[in-house]
Image (cartoon, rainbow, N blue to C red):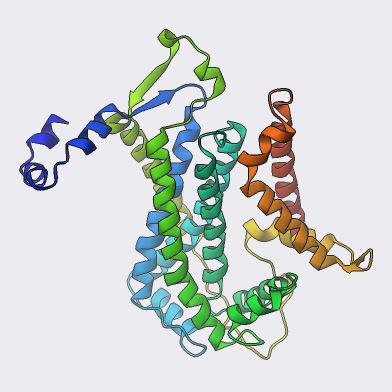
Length: 360
């Protein structure tokens, strides 16, 4: 820290903007160390993968041209003619999947450690909203290469959106830019993917990080009950920050391995007039919902099964978003194990339905 204070650039900025409060915060911020501290790093890993998404996405924008006649060709040109273009696209695609994966891990680690409780209710809400936005990134970006699988998967996905009661048809029309998936849909998804979602995500991310910095790292109940002499913590900077960087490097190694040895394929160009190929599936993080909708009967008590399934998942999503506000009502101090059971059942259900979706 003394080296930073003696740095000429820092001194120049400090004279003009008084950086003392920032230094005071950095010097005194501590991170508790205990048997579950490993989960603290999952949030940082998710943030790192988002940064990779932004950097690789900007590079892809230099060559991508949205349109029925240009989307597929521009991606193919990028992958075949541009130096390391195939690698940048592969990193972008793999990092998107890894970001959602670690966002799920981070969410469930927060859930099981009960880090959503007072005073961190809004931290949970903002985190879950970011997970939904990350899934929205995946859905909107899937169509942009305009290949066959993406075209029909988007058609199926927007048809499902259209079954949402009351507002579904309107949302489907807005997403598609008309009654069908066409060139207008590419422009809509392109605008959503590179402008609307990033703007919303950055605002929610800023709030999420602000909440964390203001309230500090969550301390589990077993840690809080320890006597002061048995509690251990490390400074956030540089100790925890350097450990975070080490995990980032490890994830970067995994990401590069996947991108090089399992490059993301482009597939066949979409044909608006061809029939849907066999095996159309959504991305893995939508699979448990997609498979659930497939397993619901066509009619349930006179109601269309798909509509019933959409309403069911909508209610579940709302309940999950508001966990901090109803958890005390159903669990409280008398049944603390109940929330663990709910979380475990949710994980088992999602994994089981995802596996079934890929096997059938």
